[in-house]
Length: 144
Image (cartoon, rainbow, N blue to C red; front, side):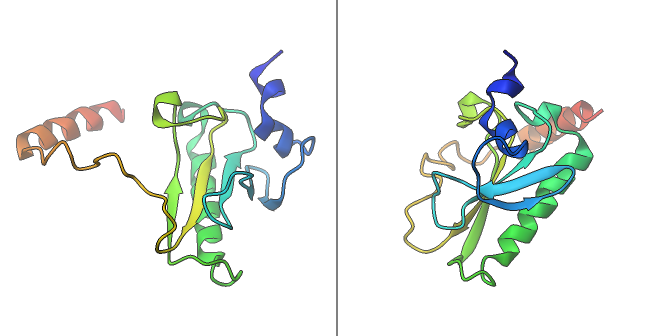
C-alpha cells in the first residue's frame, strides 16, 4: 500500500473522499479544514502527493501561495470575520505536521480567538549581526 493510497488529501483531490471544495485547478485543490481554528479555515494542497516541501515544485508552490492569497483576500467579501489572516505550513512532525501531504493553512483571525504562537517566540533573545550574517551566508550557499 503506497503513501498516496493511504493519504486522505490524495483521496480528496481524486474526488474519492468527502470535502467542501473552495477551489480546484490542474495544480492545487483548496478545501475547508474539518478541524477549523475559526470559520473559513481553508487548506490548500498540491494535487500530487508530497509529504512535505521537498517534493513540491516551485510552480506548484507558487500556485499554492497564489490560491491561498486569493482565499485570504476573499474572507471579507464572503462574510467571514477576518481582522487578519495567518498562512501556516508545518513541514515535518517536529513542526506540528499531522497529515503528511504538504498543505498550507489559510486561517482567518479575529481579536480574542485564542489562536497564536504562545511558546516564547522571542525567548532566545536577539542574536548579534555576526551570527545573523553567518546564517544568511550558509542559507545563501544552500540555495544552490
